[in-house]
Length: 223
Image 1 (cartoon, one colour):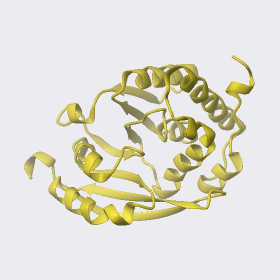
Image 2 (spheres, helix red, strand yellow):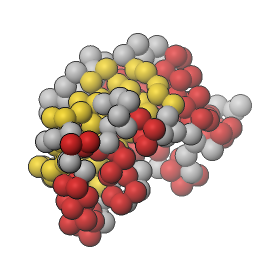
Image 3 (cartoon, one colour):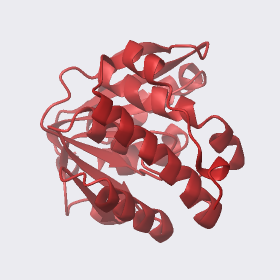
Image 4 (cartoon, rainbow, N blue to C red):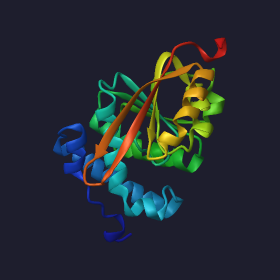
């Protein structure tokens, strides 16, 4: 494989602007991860061609989670991790946090396991499973979901794996205002309450990500 095919320029300054300074070692790990995504996508179609062309944006957007959720806490589950955004980025930038990457598609789960192993991310584990199958089997104190689709598709199964008293944080874009009322209704039906909406401007991208935070105030099964 040619060097050009796996080249990746990490938007380090923008990432640091949104979530704080990183070490050179962390920057090196992020760069290696970016090249792995490019390489893996050529072989297994991890992300679309369009997403590859703007791969740096995914790093900035993922890092914005660290600005929106402070403190991050001791553990984080990335629901529907796909190619590893935001979970792998969060794990590299906050190595003290235990990260679980939840992914239903086998080829992506295999890629994630390979990345975790090659980058020696000892605080990261990969769980190959559908969210619907995990309800009642596992629960997370803090989880996030990015690019999983609209609230009708993702919110109920995502809330189903959140522990009572736990939090779910959704990455949302411009359509969030149209979805918000439906999200509130679905959340309440499933035991979750929308408690916070945080807008984070993404440096150099002229756009904003809204982080919608739901708290689970009672167990799903009791309601």
